[in-house]
Image (cartoon, rainbow, N blue to C red; front, side, top):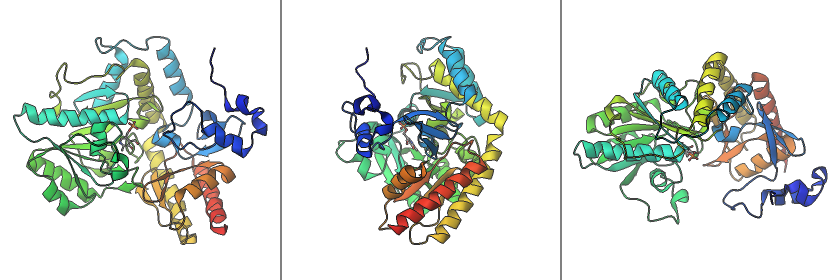
Length: 419
Ligand code: PLP
């Protein structure tokens, strides 16, 4: 028998749960306190809405942090998961199975990249890319080992990906971090010219930085990175974990920039909510990792692969890229108008596609807007770095839902401003 009791069971009738009780619900006695959870309990999801245990519906512009591209409980994804779960859940990587092979084919065909490595998360995808870059240099008999990344970047929480995450707050207290990492300012071509020297095995960059507050790379910066990597013999790695899988209005973020990297890391939205990561590797580095060099027990297991495969098919059927471009420009327009109407509270938005950030002006802080939006307007948004509200709704969000969300956000801003 499960010893876990729902907050409703602990505190009595869910409808009678007071705010204090709800806050306690977020402070579970046995879950590690490494997250700041909001004081609500999510019971289920439906399209662009999440529903709490009291039946309260929230318009979800977080989407599992840029994960649920097709929204919650999409029937085709649910069916694909159920069918695969009833067929084969795990076979190990000692054996080939069709879901991973078919998904690799689809990703290779759509990207033009040659090989795909599957893992379970974004940080693992970046770890694999880091190892690949070092082995690539090693196999060529080169001494270069440095992984260069950008200030403000976020590449994950495992030690290698954390060492590439050039944001002090994430690293502090976890030293010593692995050596061989260097950092360069984001969108600064002159600095990159100097930093990307012959010691660099790979330059890893997010086309749109997410955690630092939704900051797009300039096309010129990524094009310069491509040129410099070619000239100096380093691999160019795009971390598309947050900005890929259609979020910018193209399946891959690199397509939206017209700059082709050597390696792409993916995760988050790939399986629309099931844990999966992937590394796409271009021909030049496709044979670097050999049997025994790298691996994972669960990576590429059948159920997430089946979900990812279905995701690709559903997005084709929906013509999602054109839809994203349309609703994204509507959302951006609303945010620009909001910034004009409330210049004391928020600044002009940043971002690309359906990955948008609305900077909050000091002395206001994002938490006030996030909490007010949730409590008063049933709108879910979250705060990213640089005091910025991040809006990453499901990519299936309708124009009516965008309008609705922006009305709720405007009332939120008005409420915060009045206090
Ligand atoms: N890279 C980027 C750009 C991310 O946004 C994230 C997560 O937010 C990661 C890597 C790490 O992914 P995961 O949390 O799946 O390990």
